[in-house]
Amino acid sequence: MLIVDWSGALLRDTLVAIGLSTMALCARHYHRRPDHALTPGGAFEADRCGPVEGVAAGAGIVMSRRLLMVAVALLAGCASPPPDERLHSTLWVQTSAEYAISTRQVFGMATRGLDGALADPGWTALEGGRTGAELRPAIIVDVDETVLDNSGHQGRMIRAREGFTRDSWRKWVSEAAAPAVPGAADYLHAAADRGITVFYVTNRHHVLEDDTRRNLLAAGFPVASEEDVVLTREETEEWTRDKSSRREFIGQHHRVLQVVGDDLADFVPLPKGADDEQRLYLATVNAQRWGTYWFMIPNPMYGSWEQALMPGGVALFGRPMEDKFRHLDTQ
Ligand SMILES: [Mg+2]
Image (cartoon, rainbow, N blue to C red; front, side, top):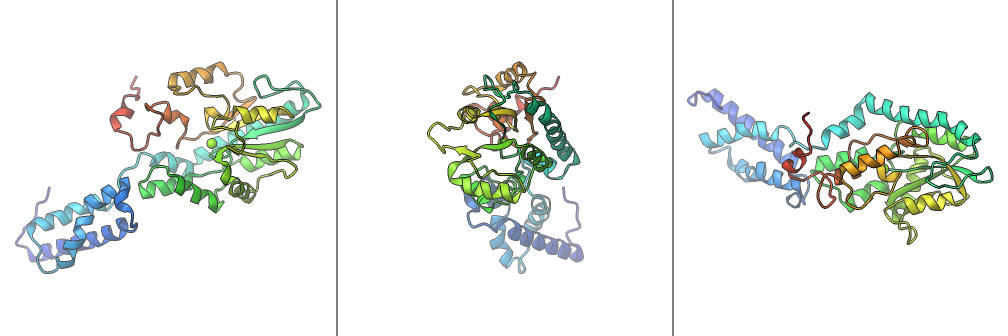
């Protein structure tokens, strides 16, 4: 609501100045990308700010009352970015002490379990996995959001108002600059120092393996060179998105002491189309494994938990709010 004295020249001039400044700000802030019209963010940008640019060019000459009102309204509309449901979880990962504590807590627990697991030749973290002192000890870790922190890529998507795209992901991976998840390097070195081979089992596509290896080394992680320890998706025909075949491959020659991941699928095969109740059942039937053989790193930003809520197994971003609200428990 606007209550002004329209005859007041000073006030009018002030509003004009504010309006023009706002338009300029909007134009600068939201019209940087040439492809904006093709993105969800583009729709916002065009609706809110796009038409203003042409008007702004001649606005110094004629400023109607209507335009003044539009200018003031723009203060509210363009002064802050549009809401994005991914923002809070990403900020939690990037800024909160609680996230860093949580990840260090998990890696610390896993580290303290290494000696006992190593000393027990009957210890295996794999269902039906081989045991025996003759097998080489190993651990299996997932990469993304388990040992490498890609919240920066999440931040880029939020800034751009874009969903996940292969191009933006590959660009991020090619930079090989994702930092370590807090506590990961200490844990991985604690394992390597004990003669335990660290296997990185990731669903990054195999064409990204070299970049991934560079990033793991840049983050200060141990990456053995005697054998391939970075097992990527489709590196062989059998190595599908389901990581079971890769765990079994490692288990043929190694006694796997621990598995660390950020997604249920890092530990068990997920039935196609599994809903949230089926996932919780899988968590419950494996209750004795969590914190002893299997260790879960928190990832509130994305994961297979999202797909369990949406028909067709899609991510939550960009889905209708009502589809998400119906999962909200208020009891
Ligand atoms: Mg992951």
